[in-house]
Length: 323
Image 1 (cartoon, rainbow, N blue to C red):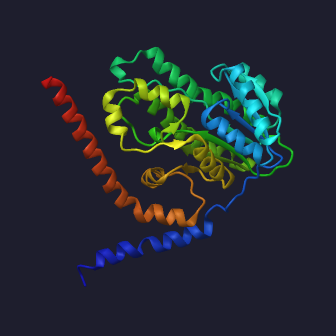
Image 2 (cartoon, one colour):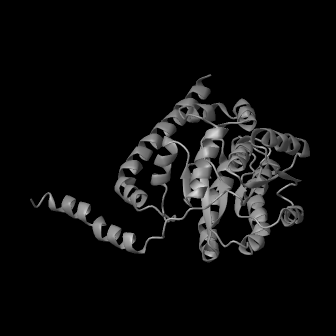
Image 3 (cartoon, rainbow, N blue to C red):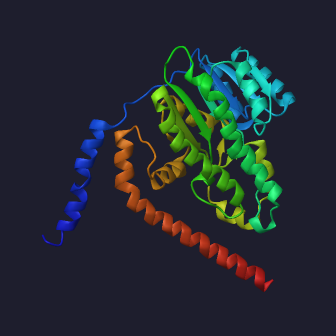
């Protein structure tokens, strides 16, 4: 009995904590999409375009922002043909705050802001030029600051006062670092910190922040990425499965509408979400229970993955030395 006592205490200790959480936890929220303004950056292709199709099909007024006017016009026409909805388009580079601010001002008050733009150049840091590093940080991270800062005043002035949303599209590379993703992971990890702090700043305005963590997604950008990423990256990432842009968009929109802070997209994503929950907000009592209950087990699983990755890296370098 004495031997079992520590295990019993370990099982019983979370109970008062869960009771307290159940009493004071944030209330569930539902963010409506129909007849509301959804503004999507990087919306001319991939996940952004898939999100635009889904939002338009649910009756949202959709605006798209991207660099290529030609692709934006093609996206606008494809949405018109599929849903009958007219879409507003804005050609702008998210790195230019003044241009972004004007586009958002022209678009009008936003109810759901999806910050989706992203660029990726896979390469080991030693071999990567600082211009490429700066390019990824400027588009993925600073571009997100520009878009959100430009949109916030109008989001706070929205007339209906219904729950609003700011969603940042990160990546599973924003939850765990991968060989060859040094700069990209830094830019995507940064979105998590931005989101956690921002949620505290905007919750009083009934604005709910979500961070979506998609896996490899079948997009034109991903096809180009796999052609140039380092051999060792392909070995380490080869075991993970990819998703279609439409499936990612469905998971993302469901998470946005439920006000979830962390939005995983597949089984691996759910495991990573639990393993990296940290101090992130959690609206669901049951997800909080799962996070506490399985955090230790998933840490052990994560260690096995890490050990395997480092063994692969060691063997790869040893093989290179022998050849």
